[in-house]
Image 1: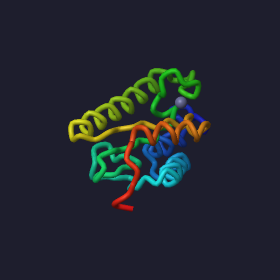
Image 2 (image 1 turned 60 degrees about the vertical axis):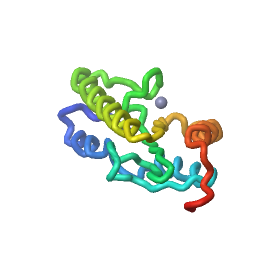
Image 3 (image 1 turned 180 degrees about the vertical axis):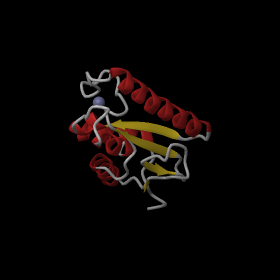
Image 4 (image 1 turned 90 degrees about the horizontal axis):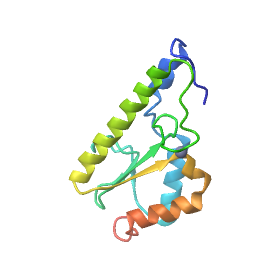
Length: 143
Ligand SMILES: [Zn+2]
């Protein structure tokens, strides 16, 4: 994804896509869950932060995060554009605080919460293993 300068008219459109729904990454994670036999709903707006994938009955929620937009710590994709750095640092901070707020609210309600980072999709088998460990239960009753 290109990263236009703040005065670029494309920027506001890109900003609107930060929480864009049904991205390719989300679809890939959904496929992994299906492969594990794990039942989910997409874009659950009734839960804090509108998790990308969630199961209220099993009480878990997954956020599929773009490494750039959500500033994945230690990830090579989490760069800060050279132009207008203050703007970007602030933007990443807002995104991260919003994420943290949603996670706290969900955990208070007894949810297991997982972040799936875009870069993890480079190793789908490892991701599938991690998700199956986090989500634990195989779907047997609600699928
Ligand atoms: Zn990453």
